[in-house]
Amino acid sequence: MHTSGCPASFPHAHTSALYDVAGGSDGSRGGTCLCTGTTGCDGPSGLGVPNGTAAFTG
Image (cartoon, rainbow, N blue to C red; front, side, top):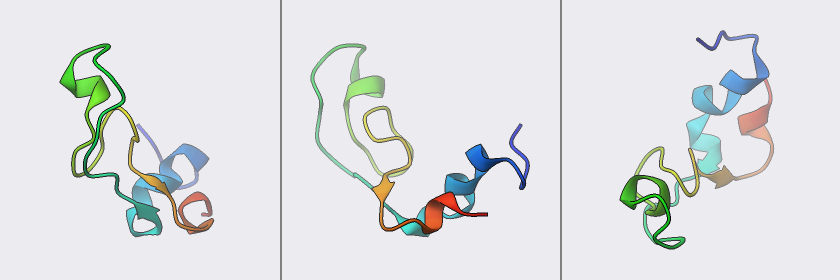
């Protein structure tokens, strides 16, 4: 479980500072769960790509 002081929790607390990759594919390895971009957290892009550094500060 992530806590508020743990750096790994920062992106989850600041998702508005990430661009969500809501579509696309990086191939067919691992099935759709790992290879297809969807709204929200997904295999290829996780929570999204950075929009500045706000997602990585506490």
